Image (cartoon, rainbow, N blue to C red; front, side, top):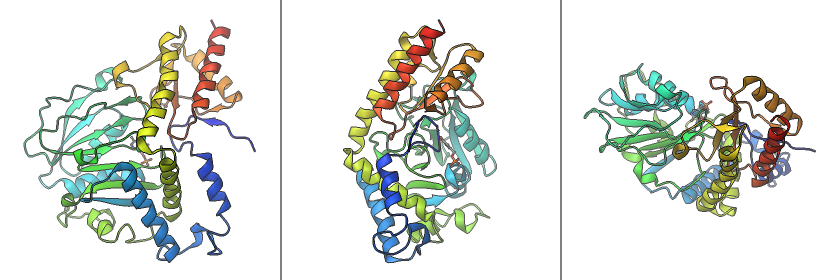
Length: 360
Ligand SMILES: *Cc1c(COP(=O)(O)O)cnc(C)c1O
């Protein structure tokens, strides 16, 4: 067996320990004589899996009791619609557009009401986070929406926007569990799990209880109502059962690693290795404003498209996979999520140094 260093933005690298454990339990999950994939989601064994997953997530993030944790389907993109359908009581919301995912959410919300763009960094290809300390937020806006870590562009909100008392909704798909968060500052925190937690198809929604109501926009499908899923503890219909099981294993792995404080430290160390090199390199350059740099997604370029392509090709041959930048940006991007070992980043930088010397 040989595994590569996988720098994919998502679906992305998972802890080897978790994969091995899942492999061990594949044919017979703890004496049940079946795989988790084959078992009823109403069984005792599965009930324990989903309850433990929720509790471990609550422990990791210190989620207050007045928040529900929902394990849903449809990926992060489904939430682009579900959020306005459930939260737009006044049919108005403020969106901060800092990348493609925020833009998609903003566009989707326009289907359901008056989505107002209150800030954007599109003027400089989303290479920075705009100043959000004093935005012109409509009084009657139901919420303020951000994408906290911009997967494609490699920027991160280091400070949350001043919402002026409005509910904050955040897509944290690509920074989920990468560092501690104060959940109480948000109304909704959600993310697709395939970036930093588990297999694609599961989206986790952490939502303050008072935001879960019967009062959704007319025509909202049953499956898209938070209340339906909250009342049924994520078991209204068959959940993405196997995916949730893997998420649960990753939560246990994170606890064993020391929790989110330890992950933050580890992620800062890893990112520093790469950013320090980018700052000193004569060939490679980071593409975003230094103070807004993401710890998770690190885009960079050589300034020469042919050389970029050569780098991606040679890196792949050397065992560094998925370094090609997003199709809308070009260049390279190294995603260095929780499960990427420090050694993977060190070896990548070694390889970049060698490439730079050879192509000077
Ligand atoms: C990947 C990603 C999405 C889309 O996720 P899907 O699960 O494919 O819908 C949305 N937001 C962010 C920040 C992402 O990184």
